[in-house]
Image (cartoon, rainbow, N blue to C red; front, side, top):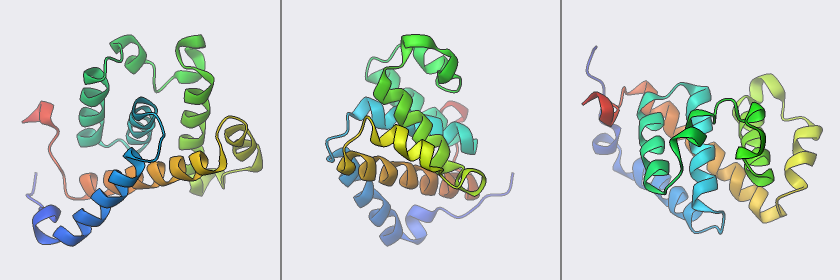
Length: 149
């Protein structure tokens, strides 16, 4: 594999800007485990090995059971393993991440709005957007997952 740019070194201001948004999300009041589940699901959709590895490790460190992590991709079939807010967040993450395909329909918005306050929904959408940006950076510049080092 061809070596690619270390974007953190080349454009530290861009990395700092993304880190600032990450800091905002983590202080937004959304539960950290919920945010990490969304980060994991977005990274699954985008097939970002670096972020999949990182967020799986982060969720395990937060005490999330491996059985739950194994079913994030198939959360709709996982019964009560995911609570109502987690299911809504994962559905919203899928719709927003696949915006080119979904157009984020009113039905998806209504379902998310039913369980999140307006601020929570905005913050959740910021988190989803941020992870999509991080996925694109990690994939484009071939960040190596910790497991592959």
